[in-house]
Image 1 (tube, rainbow over the protein chains, first blue to last red):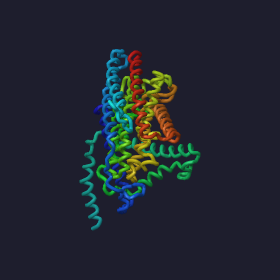
Image 2: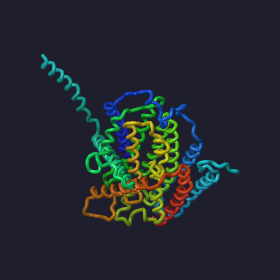
Image 3: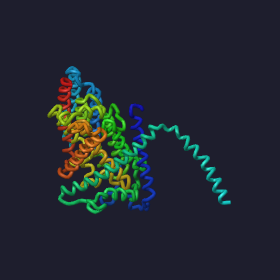
Image 4: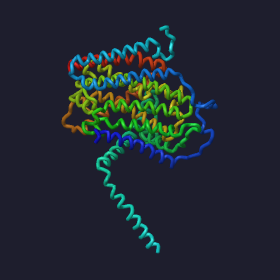
Length: 124
Length: 360
């Protein structure tokens, strides 16, 4: 049914139901004795300072951006991969051109220093 | 008096409830069968994860020249995982004071549900598969990306700086290694000409010489290797386990989780290891087809035997690598992915595409 996704949907439902049922079972047999010290965040024994919502380095945002480009590229390659078998070099050349354009983008961000963990300032 | 009351009360209850239950024939038979199959798969995953946790402890122990669990259950501590599972059910469930409660509860549910959904397309034999989706490989690839969201949610909702740093690093690592995994998956798909897992496995039938891993030697071997290394990185295993490194970030994004919620992350990690190894087996090592074609054993017996033995061997190699190699630094991890694996994967895909378009 629905090309097999009916089964996938029921697997999702049953996965969620399994987790909730087990949490319910666990709530019946586990102790519940909340104390203020137990509810503080764990920092290897030190007193926690400030909130947990700290700022983090924007390099993670750059990594996510570059991943987005390559992920969409991968999604575009999927249909081509399925029809390539025995289709001739003509079909291949189209995709090689596409991959080359994206590889140039990779080389650019590599040269600009975006792929380094600690970005060195570039002069171009 | 009492008997009269009991008789009439029970009669009233029976008369109202039984017709209601008997009218549940609107649930179709295939849904009921599917619920049973899903329950069976949950049983398989749970037993598998418990077995793999025990195996990990034994393998790590023997590599470190010690013995590991020996007492629980008698023979080499085989019941150790069962005891640990029950223990985790009995632990107190602590949700930190300022944590985001709905998100805190949601994260392990997403992680487990996504791993569980990936078992729909694993072919244990030509007919023993929950649902032979015609886009099986794309389905599994998409699901593995949802895990990243769940990890970010877990790290954010814990209200712990170190959990957040661990989650963000882990998300950056997972997201970076999605690209070589996708390109290596595509190399396998190009050789097969189909995204259906059963179809890809059947094209490698007939013996070990038909497997895709030697079909375009050495490039398909590189693709299999990159898929395996990417799988190691996707499941946060050493040498890529900076996000949950015991010596650095305590436990990364699952520091604040206790009891059954923690065991869900663990269960999902071992299920993901199984799925990553299963992907390599399906795409490059023949899936459920055998090393030599045997005709006297029925397919429903031989198929699961070959599939499980190959997949569990690869899972064992994952554990072997974990306890042998040191951990990579985070900048080495990122540069390995972006500067070495991705150019190699692109060139590899191009060459395998050239071979396939000519030879098909």
